[in-house]
Amino acid sequence: MKQFAYLVPRSLDEAISFHEAHGDRAKYVAGGTDVLVKIKEGKILPDYLISLKHILGQDRPLLNQETGELYIGSFVTHRMIEKSAIVRIHYPILHDAIRNIGSVQIRNVATIGGNLVNAVPSADGAIPLITLDATANIQGPKGERSVDLARFFLGPGLCDLERSEILIEIVVPPLLLRTGSAYIKFGRREAMELPMLGVGVLLSLGESSVTCVKARICLGVAAPTPIRALEAEAFLVGKPIDGGTLEKAGKIAAKESRVRDSIRGVAWYRREMVGVLVKRMGLKCMERIKKLAQ
Amino acid sequence: MGKMISFALNGNKMAVEVKDHWTLLHLLREELGLLGTKEGCGSGECGACTVIVDGMAVNSCLFPGLEIAEKDVVTIEGLTSPDGTLHPLQKSFVENGGIQCGYCTPGMIMSAKALLDESPNATEEEIKHSLAGNICRCTGYVQIIDSIKSISEGGVEEVHVVAWKNKEKDE
Image (cartoon, rainbow over all chains, first blue to last red):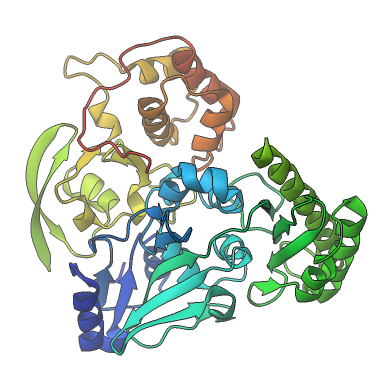
């Protein structure tokens, strides 16, 4: 394996200044489960790795009780999110996705920020967070900025990060009352698999618990980046939610998807499954709303 | 380039010089001569290199060596008592036919230990979820799961052998 110097900054500012000093010869690393594989395969050849593991205050999901916002520091491991009771109960879509990313060994060290900045089309971490309308907070040499996570992904392996910038935090806005959410990673195996398709659905119902007031449908591996099925979302709002409306929404979402043939699955099958899974996840949202109400 | 770090290996405090680019697996096998931990794929897919760092199962092939500074590392060698008595999990693997070629066994046992330390009465479902990152190509999964179940259902009290600090708390 290529030799590199391993730098351990103690603050974000220090990390950024290290990166500015070494430029393209340096690479940020958090858990390292992707970066070290790429180095071993010779796909990247950094002279410096800048570890982000020792920066304090970024290591667990926190719910702000006053604003209802959920803060997830970028360097929170997948395992911390998987074990979080807040996430399991109130953001089940995130729990659905995270518990099936990699293995326990990977989740114990791999961070959610690392998952996101890799920007692979199959990013299981991104779909639920986009479905939840999350924002990404970014810090760089010029200061802090925020970007909608839905706009963060620019192409395969490409995200909206300027030179030396670090994704530092994900913020999930408060959930409406009567909200349910669900994610399915659809593949051929139960574990250690990249999805053939990832489908996240969020539904919020009005006071009668029948009419949809908010809908989010986000698809993974259905385009070069995660995409929202905007037409299907718009179709659902204002309608009573049942198997019939969800089936129609699924068909619209399938048309919106830009699936293609790959080794993991052929396009026509993927498109068909978008429809099936949108409906299935919609029904799961409804189940979860009912369960919360009890 | 290298740095002196101290850490606990199987309960023994030690100080070693670690080169920046070494993985924990390299440190264990090539520098410290502990050959119990295996390298399979080298890319975090197979789990043969699983060791426990501060109570958590990790792939040592992808774990930066320098990151074990001030941490507790437990390898398969740390499970057997100094007098040669096998750990209950090791014994169970032997008795239940959980070992064929044996290459995956250290990783399997370390994943199982990390699970049982946290939930001593883990269900079959939890065992399968926790072992998803450990591949056995002799395909003896049934016996492997049986080996672990006989501990989690059998009420063996002392699964802990080496204690560590700061067990992670939820929230």
